[in-house]
Length: 184
Image (cartoon, rainbow, N blue to C red; front, side):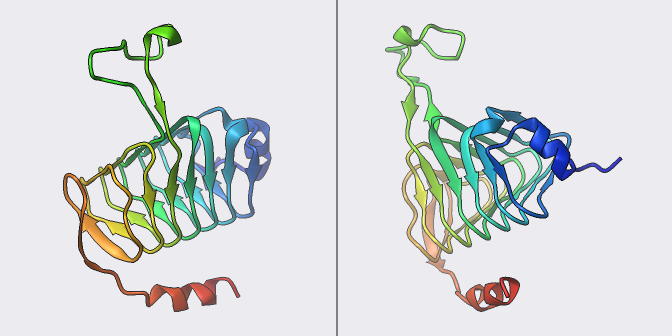
């Protein structure tokens, strides 16, 4: 038996859509699979958790031990992008101010959950153990160094790192030419 689901098995799990040549680990967990779309040639590794409305483009890689919590918002990861191991992406978050209760076991009227979509653009790579907070847009071509906190939008074609993530320098665009060869 393969460590990845077959296309037939993925269809049985009830995903919204599954592209061609997709690889999804049998050790990954999905909550609301009917809201999750996985594009052509994408891969989801062991011990990942995806929950809520999530759209993965083509050639997207979600490395081992990553989690994406979309809640009532949406997480989009565009083409040729990926997350390194242990990255967390939140489109939903409790209010930890002390004015409200927190966690999903509490009735909604006592909580103040923030739900804002997250967009991760084309050619984005997020380093290991990063955290992306609700409402963030990471623009095309951006890379983020390991263990960074992304709480604000990141501009295109930059290299960012830190807590919070700050732009260090520009990123080269040579990979745009390489991508043309992949799509031929």
